[in-house]
Length: 124
Image (cartoon, rainbow, N blue to C red; front, side, top):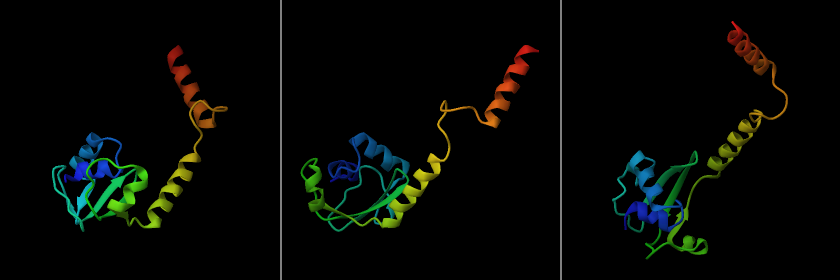
């Protein structure tokens, strides 16, 4: 089975075309080598993929006939991703929450200066 089709079948990508694009960009590796979307996978292979800033590691157990329900995924692959990868993703999420969202609350001092600079240059 093709690697892009396998990743779509075991629900790591929402569509097969997204899985194909990930393979073309080099985000998918089979047995530590970058692969094309048409590369076949076999039971016993190790797939590494980067998705949403997390490096997932999968062990292929069996090949499904078609796309699976979420409950059946564990029959066909084992996720051996270390927990540290998910923890670093949580830290990134907290780092992004520090900055206020655009348009929320009063302008900061920097925003106020930018506004003043913009309005002063427009009048001249």
